[in-house]
Length: 571
Image (cartoon, rainbow, N blue to C red):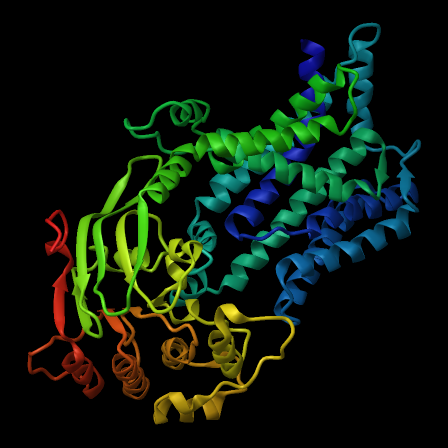
């Protein structure tokens, strides 16, 4: 047992630093940085070359750290200046680092008899265990000191600082740029810090491995990084701190909760690395192929994910099984009965919509009213088929709809989210977006896309399409993007009878808001049924609202209050 523990710690501890780097980049920056693979071998390669040629020890270490920082900077430069994706930028930097490693090592470079301070530890271990078990107490002590110091630096100095608080905000990809800029920071500052520190940690790990093995092997980088990322995922699933399951959880869900430990992200990453090397050492004692531990690791990651997420998975299955959609003729009302929408989680299940009943008369516009956070957007997303839940939904539509399309409610219910970027492709031009929606489900590889007919659009919208038709959608303002999203509902050949609009005029200037109302009027003339959420319109009330909002208010046929249609009998 002593020999087993020695083997695990001796092999695992140097790689814990890579795990810390993965926490900084993969967890908080949401980035898989392949530059790690180059830093792991390129830094040690230049250090080994300098040591073999008689350079001072500390100068060789400094050169290794500097090279890893340079590789990280090259990745950042490619992302910032050339606007490459982080994964691609890291791949190019790793490729360059691998070339540098080959230049210095020709594949493998041995330290031979080059003297380093690490030799004293090896000699101590040799003298101490001579004639007994082959143990490595002093080397393990050094690895443990470096790993513990690095973890303490990341946990207590970096992540617990005010800067660290801003750095941890990078975990939210949707809000980080806006949030950080509002307090005078940029996400590039956080990105640069995390990538450089992560690569320095990987270089330090590679140096420890080099001194332990007495050589540098150019091909070790990618294998080390991929292995540690897998180990991190397992550690995240099994060991990271998480809330307990609610009392309603049963069976496998509770079993999964009992397997988890209250560890910080960095501790969980280290635990995952050590767990992998325990598995590696255990399998090594059996006559099986060397690839078996990696396959076992993948299987354990999948199993642990299912175990920890079992409650959510089962809840989604149950909700899907209780979600019934029926297609009815276009002249009938749109109905949703006994709608329940829940957000399953580890701490508790939150019911957002509780037995709601809704009925919309054909060819009318209805306003859905509710307090902030009451679930209006959630309700619309369920009705549009974008969110799981339970209930009976009757959707009026034209033509013969196959059963499988009826089950996919999102294909027969139009929905425009409050976030304008979600309903159109920012990388396509305005005309390409409209052409995509016009073709719809009849898209084929045998035809080139055709410029859409803008004559069906209101004059104001047609003018916008003509002026900005060849510009990509991500160059439009938020208001113009929302105009494009609503216009797509009109040009569609399989245009839906039911249209759900989640705050279509919010944050829009008068010009764009007016165009959106023009489109809404066109939808009503085409006998569509609309359900609208909009806070700043009040029907039958004289106010100082903008002209477009006043026009929208005049188009409404009914007002429905979300809290009044829940837990009630069907109308």
